[in-house]
Length: 365
Image 1 (cartoon, rainbow, N blue to C red):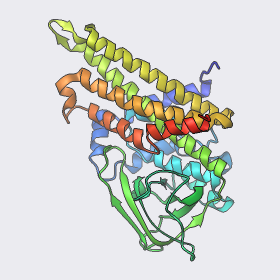
Image 2 (image 1 turned 90 degrees about the vertical axis):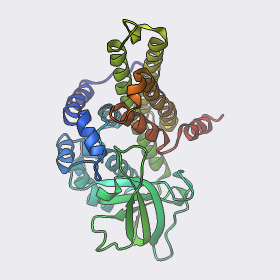
Image 3 (image 1 turned 180 degrees about the horizontal axis):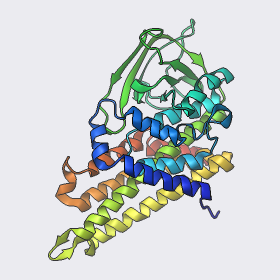
Image 4 (image 1 turned 60 degrees about the vertical axis):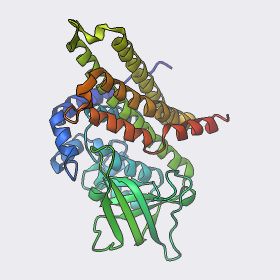
């Protein structure tokens, strides 16, 4: 397959690179990482005006109605800029609604999401049983109300609704827009996360009314495959930026009157970074293309991309840190933010080992 971007996709990528580079310089990323909320309403509104909140929302709900490739184009640039934003969590929730939401649920939430009037999140990790979208402890009681504890829920404090995963691939929608008034059983607590640029929360539900989503297992599986592909693409952007920082430093930093990049120990490390970045990028765009055009191979391609980019993103950022030497290990240098995002992404929605096992299962090995 000879894959290349369309003119519209190139325009999206170019716009994303320019916009995010201008809005999220390192000083801004650092300030937002240290901020309790992690983003501003003005920053979110600018993303909305670009249409990014509704990239995969159908046009009848005021979205752009684009595909996974366009989503991955934006995700890679979000990772490159390390932009702290609820865009990822809202996209996850929108994907689940598009996949399995009822007509009423889509009508209620997708339009506001696309217009920037509402944000969502996806709660998957159980407090005790970990991550597995098909096997969860969560199950509503006979009264249709849900009691559970979910951890590592991204941007839950600023979300207006959450999609909660449960047993046998089922999911429920929880309205968070009036918590404390109509939903007193919802408790949110900020968690200490390895990546300070993406805020995570512990979400406890105690007898909270929920709305079931349709149990369309194939559609839900495609939504999860899209989510892990987006995360993999983020890691491609993170790794690309870390590699560029390392190469630039290797050109400028001199030792024994020579740039350190002229020494094989450094140049070979940088070459390995390039190999892993390009390999990750190829797998991500293969997965995105497959999810749009060849659905049968989409889940396997997505897990392949997540497994490789999860490991590669962290390895590249760690190698970049080694190239920087002592300065790279300091908190004052920005590189550690990229290392932490890459490490967090590698574990979110299934780590590389889990996804390699899934590739083997899907391939019949």
